[in-house]
Length: 162
Image (tube, rainbow, N blue to C red; front, side, top):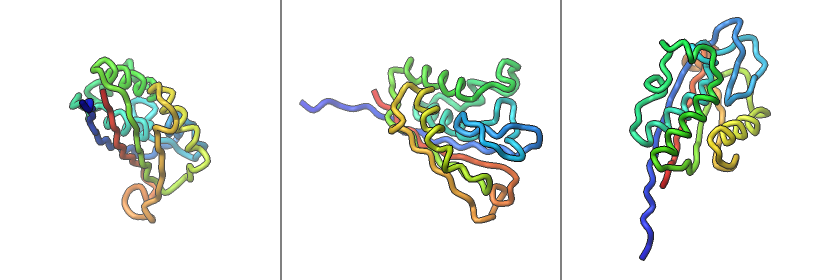
């Protein structure tokens, strides 16, 4: 008899505008840049998209439902903490992370040299191997809000299984 593998797929998306006097945090890595992303937490758009993909895979709502921006407990919080809590929620449902594929969209700065650290941070927060995490980045050829340098967005796909 062939065992049945129960798996689910989720999609996440997030966007934040750039703001002065903020650190740019992407995938839990401080990326030196003249401005950062604006938000209630550290505004890590990449991690937020991953959280939403994981939550979506199990129809558990979105990051705002679990970590609302109206709650002072999350003011300035490291988004990797939110990702770890999301991973724990997934585990309580009896699921494990199979893999995650995330794409970051912004014109500047270039992040290629930071990708391995981002993959490591995401994997560590979720208790998986770095090889289960794919982080990619692209510009939008100066089109849209990302291309005009107004902000950044990220989308992610996650596979979970039990």
